[in-house]
Image (cartoon, rainbow, N blue to C red; front, side, top):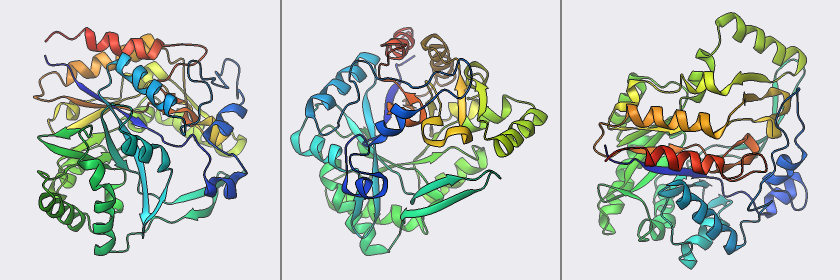
Length: 365
């Protein structure tokens, strides 16, 4: 059984930007939400406080180097940086990755995931409805923009650190069904890649709601080479009876009470035999608590521990052990605002890093 290729999703948010200053106040970063989080019930682990790296600033090269060192320690092959392209050259949070690319440091593999969604301010009302104020709209201006987007990323695709599958740079699209013409997008990029001396692009579609054989096959028929699945939402529903889900939804709407579920119960239901397909790249999830961003309208998984995370990872490794090349994503490396991270904190230290390393090392070649 070959060791899996583990790739961790990476949020490049932790630095001030002009737009965030305008929308949220001078100096805002994700740490603003993380630091002011409050426990919502007895035993709720909040706020979560980073340990080794502190409340870091991604403008600092030493932080990016230290993150890579920690990821290597965990057995992670590379980072999958979220990439924000809103059309007509508009980007956000591009500074950290631009510096990684231009400096050549850290010498740690990477790939990109296009997080193609509009950004909005959200306000939760007492009746459970959500009011949104649009900040940036995700647009798809057409063929010229598709080409401009490709050439914006071509230097990354040609970088020796860029992660590949079958000799092709891997590129994930977070909302594949949002593309107005995904077949056209893929066809244009494949053609441009070959013109520029690449073997093509290995396109990965993210799928985290309707994880079914039908959806996977549909994405493959569009032209995607593989599908990254995230079974968290499916498992969180399966972990409770219908009556309990209805009651939790009522409490969330009527009393602003978060949906709280046990990590072990959800974890046990995250995977199925679809994850054994060669063209499916499933995800493991160390923890989840969206309350720093969403307050009482959050999904919170309680009692996550490194030991339980190791069990989850080992279960998936067993399901996927027959694959020729076993690619698995970690959701996520540093999503502190949704309580979803591998980086050390004051409670567990390097626990999640050690847990993943132990699960990988337990695999017999």
